[in-house]
Image (cartoon, rainbow, N blue to C red; front, side):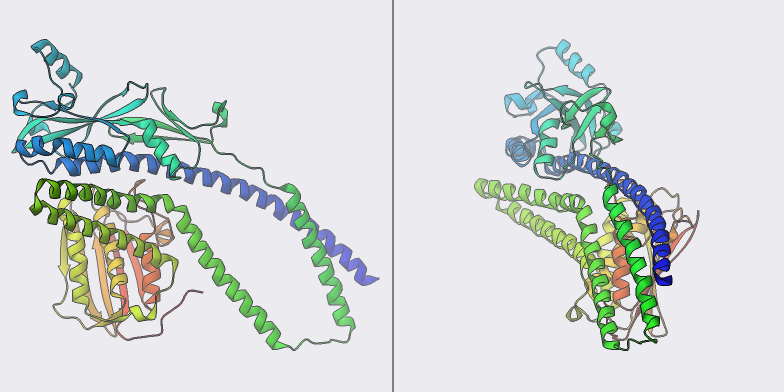
Length: 532
């Protein structure tokens, strides 16, 4: 009788506690859905920005080949046709000349000509935002004019690229991109899966929202700043209501289970302290639990990779498009007998293929454990030389000084050479990015031996890391960089790699003075740490 009373009492308490927990879970589930919508919005914004910027990079890559007017006249039609084949959203490519028209031998529709001085003045007035002197032009800058409608009543984004040949501004290359076709391609290739709309100054540029969607149904709005344009991004997503009945059933089951547990405990003690001594049974249960936990961690990694699949697809798509361009160029050069240019294109194809391989390896290192046969004795100075050779061009382009304090000869270290290079590249690129806005753009790369360990330090003169955020920097997908510049995986992957090497990675930072990342690697071969 007394045991039954205990069971009812425990059941009521368990029901109350479970109901409270259920209410909290419903609240958290709603919050998670809202966070997912924000992530989706950033992903769509990233894809739209990436699509436009990718087109700009490809166009600049092609135009940089024209070193003389003869090159321009000779290769204009083949190069512009290649651009249009690669990207169907490019509808028109024309040249607006700033020198005598008779120096160009381009197709009639590709050269913006003028019949009289009045027509010329009108053309210049329409392009008053463009600098007409070479000294005022930034060769890598992309200018834009107001979006316009095409003949089929589709909005087009108009991009203008300065063309400087032999230190003379000879004109602007004007490219019209069909916004509707570009966005449809992103939707058709599943890079964007949520309905959205783009507008500028109240004018709808593109919309894939369901019919009769009310403005109150829009779940997220973002502003995309791109080449002087301010685009409003509106996203529609269905927020499903949490299943309250399921939580109620769950609460009842938990309470019932607690009551049954109390009943069993009273029966246990009433049976004169009957002990369960089967240790193997508990060991098996514990092992199963550990295996389940390990699988859950691995599944979580793969799910995380799935969330950034669109970003990875963009990173791989860019070198693929460069490969396509150089493939077309190889065919054209072979056909025209320009065999000396074929080798250059082939080298570019190999470089871009290597770039894709590195991207795949970087993602793979986060999703799986390292294999033992990838580890061997490596000379640190060789690793450092490879790393510096990879990043030095980026440092020079951004006017960042890389100071090295490395002994000429260091003992060999047992490691995975590719993974350690990846860690150091991540740290050096992060350090470079952190000093971009600093007056003193200096990054130090140091190494020394202490005891049985190799110490590697990367320090910068940047703005430092907020003490409240320094514990989050190794968390996957956490980043302080601008949208589209980083995925937040670099330091997380680096931490995983160093941990697998039985090493340590430490960070110290001071606001206004910069940060110091220290990697500690043991020289001796040890049993590799595997994730559980």
